[in-house]
Length: 460
Image (cartoon, rainbow, N blue to C red; front, side):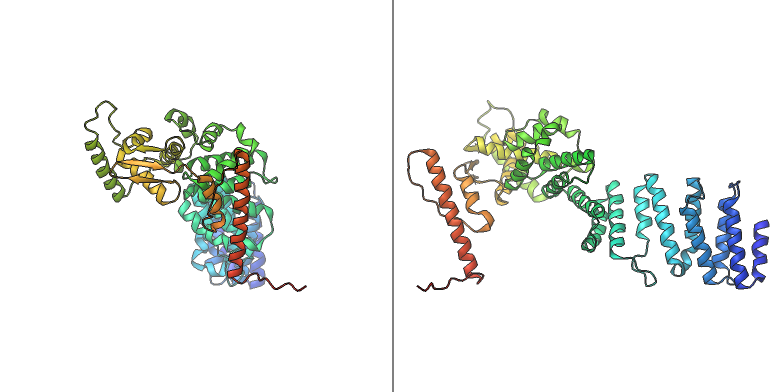
């Protein structure tokens, strides 16, 4: 009651004396040794300052600024008490937030710091999203906006809320050009890699993690962690030429041989078939989103079931082999990555394989194995043809490397004419020269058609 009586006496004072009286009272409350009732007293003071019509806006802003300064300066040591004071102050100010935007922003930053220390990631992010970054009174510079958005993204990713994190990452991307601060740019790139990881864009994530693992400004242990994340994402990426390039880059990196996932990475790079026992240990290192269960589309499920029924009917006469699997598709992201890899690896071993044989290799129903092979062929990740009458998949094992070179940069096919020169190394050297010349000629032709280069006449 003593505090309320004193506040009531301030009503009769003029504005100049009133400001001094409130400042003295706040300083007195913060300076006393017994802080058991400090939370209640400051709440009463703030309520009086903000909601009393007789207290001018200039005075109330000044008192709140002093309180914010005291809270950030560590005058209240107890974290829980400081948190309650900040929350109550924000609740009191909320109806008149437009008049106190600067003070509210400072209080929200302090509350977010406290919540982050308590590892309440989503709550801290929610507090930061309430900060007005484009206020008419005091708009923050672009670099500060970038810093706030990156922090929100980082906090949301800690709770694996990748959908909301991506929304704020897109906002941060608008301001990424506004700073040269290496620390904030590295945080932005790390958020970029983690969002790709959570969105299951594993190839993209692997490349970004690997790039960050070379940055000398990052701590050695963190770089090792990023390299391990790059290896994990590369293993989980869809099998095909793009993944092969990422695997090659990682296998050339001498640091990867020291990490636990190196054996799986190396076998994938050398196109060796992986067994379930070999990936069991690797599976234990994955994060929950990397073990997410996947569901087949209704079309794929029906196609797999129908094709499997046909395959079983056709093979009824042959009862010597094991019964085909009844699985209609991969169950997890890791399952799919391993199955697609084994399918690609089998194309390096066999010229052709039956649906049933491929199903036995992948532990899938024959129809599901056909569906997986069909999709990989459609997407250009596997070269081959499917004969549904003979229930046979034939792999294109001739000229894969040369074809890939001929289509480098999307310039189209290069016609190859082989000639017998005797020695195999001479033949390979001649083919490389021919391909290089053909590619250069095609590039010049494209540039000429677009009017980017012209050839004038040479006068003697």
